[in-house]
Length: 394
Image (tube, rainbow, N blue to C red):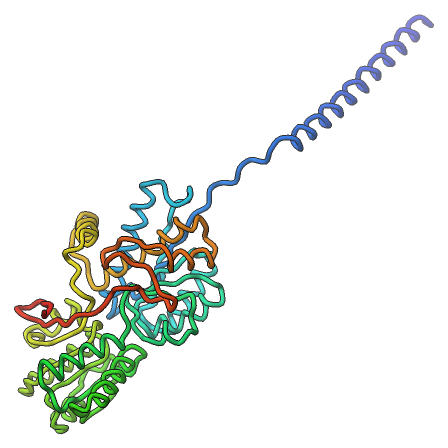
């Protein structure tokens, strides 16, 4: 009996010894594993991405201005991505619809900033751009517009983050006034505008240039309310003023209604406007009454090889000709992404330096940007609706 208890005790002692040994072995294994984890290099982080924000009028009456910019961004981004992206990063296009309304533009800008946008292609309208710019300025995010022409956006010095690939309204108004006075020989002009930053700003410059010329007088300076159905009251004021022509500052929805009501009252005087009216949508809406209307717009760039490339890409991808400001937007997208590429950085100061020093070939020409943010070498021309389409006048 004693022998049995002795054997059992010996068995238990050996079992405890083995369990303790295994536990110690596992502890040693954990220590070694921890050492290995500490010694091993951390896994490389996944490659980041470049977010190209595209805020603009993607719905509503002015969508014909905003959607071509969205298309341009997608095409340029796809071109870069097919070649491996920029510094190992792919480009993601992030759209925000602001309908060219200032209150929606601030919301769009806030959303893009919260989504860590890298650079911004937009906004489209001057009023919306002005509303959004303080948000980008505070966050130090470069914003480039293909179409916001208000001079103050670059000339005030308030928005160092802002750049554009289109000339400003003062240059546009100066050209139009020169044409009106020297080519058409006008002496009395009625100036109408839509009360917005863009339309009223253009109108005020036109008024100044006419007055300063001493060659003619402004017999009416009047604002209208955008979106109204009937503009017969202002049309009657134009008629009563003795004006020989009308210069209009604003966009195509109002311009098409005003010129239609003028022509229906047999008012055949010249109607001149800005690049907010130099759009095929104006011709479609005004129909036969669009014939003969003058408008300023970016110079004809159709002989530029980059223009042909952008046009071909748009037709191939979207099955149609591009709309207003497409080439300026394509150029802006190229300029922004080229700056990121050349800077080898997404930091604000590096991107701004590259925009001001590195030339890039675009549909609007070989460009870089001056200290104010304006593209060097771009400008306006005079167009007239002839045979149902805008034709550049030489």
